[in-house]
Length: 467
Image (cartoon, rainbow, N blue to C red):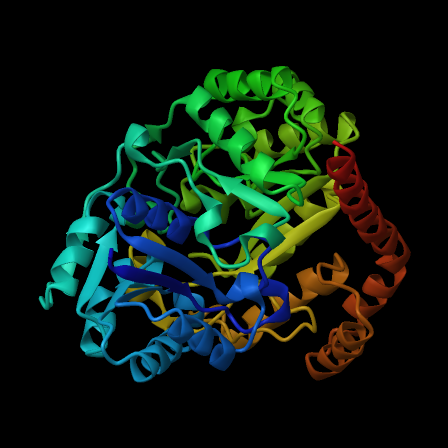
């Protein structure tokens, strides 16, 4: 009988972080292990939407002989707590750790003494070997895994995940890695700056197979680190997607502004993309230059206007508190954002994760507080984490005020009664009455936008069922 390996992901513990699909990275590892003769199952708490105790009981009932745990810095404490509970519930099963937090903070994860192996990097190429060694009683400790070549990235088999038949979105990577060097981004320290492409037809075959097995899925989510780097290749993927008449719509996490053109938008519309999301990061020229995106603010403006001219919903991403920023600089971002009239904005509070040049900047020019267990965006009820950095010129208090000013004035939160009450409380606490009144004035437009988003999802579900 083949060895049984459970791969586990702990949830972040917030209602806005529930997932509509099983953990993609763990499904890829499960596929590799299955192909190497292991019996594998993925247990994703964020997807299963259950309490930690229920997750641990579910895993223990499956009686695994080894357990791999994926860790994220935003909820590292919760992930480690789940790992401890699993160790207590299945003491005979050695634990392995991986994921972004294990890659960037391997020393801290290893120091817990919980794990026989802590894997840094992309584990597909070494997971079978490491698991075999751990099952044989070895404790390899810190293990480095090199970047996986594109053609070696497996076709995900979501049937290996618990409750996989309930998934409604499906992620896929067409490529991995990003050649750019944005100062705040840790991707280069996890997935490397080397772009690695998968075979387009193999990806399309994978999509069709998984959609046939999962009739509830209505949206394909492209989660590449830089999906449109090779624009002709990505357009060819979209053309073949349309030609094959694949029923699920296509969604993309983020696109670089300098990759947006008329032809790309036309193809995306044919794939019924729900929105186009452009990462701006900052609207202040000096802060934007410091990010080192390899773009100009004029590129952001041109792309946003082109998206709006096509009547496509426009989403944008900004980061509050980047190196060299100030309260006034963040107000530049707010004015810049408003001028482009996006339908939705993600305002992220900067997190100084290891592996970023921005963290190094704060080590030299400011203060870094504990970055673990902090979220870059507020919860549905507008609960937010304290900033993890400050400078003499831009204190934590002022960072919160800048953040709330941007979030309130653009109504960048889900407008539940609880969130609206908290918006009032925060406006009173931080003396942001003007921003609160701007929020109130913008509520009707935002309600209409969110209604359109929900109607779009309902339509896609119905369309998929009909197909």
